[in-house]
Length: 160
Ligand SMILES: [Cu+2]
Image 1 (cartoon, rainbow, N blue to C red):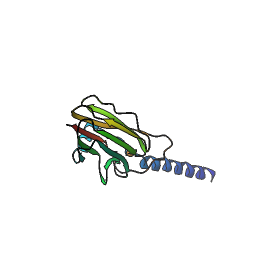
Image 2 (image 1 turned 120 degrees about the vertical axis):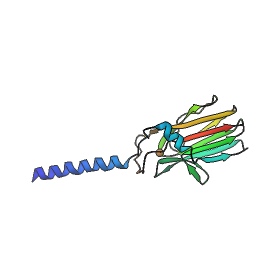
Image 3 (image 1 turned 135 degrees about the vertical axis):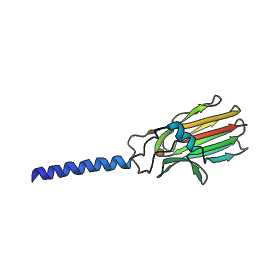
Image 4 (image 1 turned 60 degrees about the vertical axis):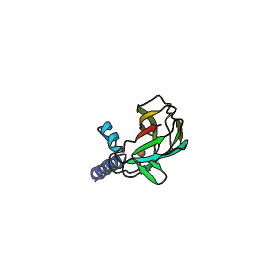
C-alpha cells in the first residue's frame, strides 16, 4: 500500500514537471538568422518625418512576443525616419530584451530592458540599421503558456 502511494506521488510529480516544462516558453528557433528573416516578411511599417517614435514589445500567446505600434503588431518592424530621430522601445513582455545591432552605422542601443523598462535610441547617421533583440528570462517571473517557437524580434531602420 505504501509503495503504491509512493509511486503514485512520484508519478504525479513527474507529470507536474512535464506539464510545467511543456507550458513554459516555446524556446528559441533552431536557425535564428532564418527566423529573423521570416520576421521581416510582414513587418509593422512606420514611415514618419516625426523626430520621435515609440514602439512597444508586448507579450502574446503565439510566439511569446511581438513589436507593437499603436494597434499594429508583428515580430518584425520597419522604420523609415529622418536623421536624428529618436526611437523609444518600451518592454511590456515578461522577458528581458536588449537591442543588438546586426549591421549598420554606429549607434548606442542602451541596456537590457526589464519589464516596463525602456530605452531610447538616437539614429544620428544616415543608412540602414538591422537590429534584433536578445531575450533573457527574468528569474522569479512565473512562466506563461505560449504556443509555438518564440518569435525572433527583428527591426530594420532606414535613416534618410
Ligand atoms: Cu516573450
